[in-house]
Image 1 (tube, rainbow, N blue to C red):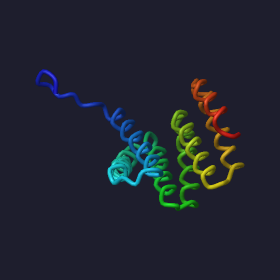
Image 2 (image 1 turned 90 degrees about the vertical axis):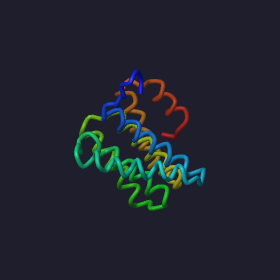
Image 3 (image 1 turned 180 degrees about the vertical axis):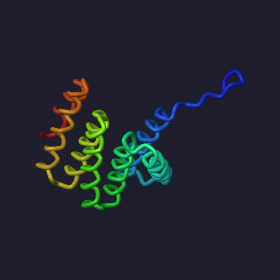
Image 4 (image 1 turned 30 degrees about the vertical axis):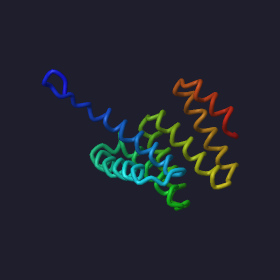
Length: 149
């Protein structure tokens, strides 16, 4: 609250923060068994379900990626692989190149950690191309140098 007026962020900013907080929390849960990260991850996914129900073209891909990350965390590999693919397709279908790139990169990480380097390489290549399409040349270069594809 500033000067007696409260500032309410537009929904799209809230959903971006929600999405990023969920992704970060799921990643941290792979190395830290801290209940606070689980609470944030689960709350982010639950709230994103509401947004995805009301605006699927804008939010379904975000929900699918959070669900993929959840499946990855719990070792539900078949579900995770399908959810990553669904998130990538939904982001592409609705023009969310930045989220498509992130979903491809996360799918690459998933497959690499499962020991499937050829599949991981495919996803890293897709992420690289999406980042270039987005104009994120430094990120694309970083990916090319850090990830096998």
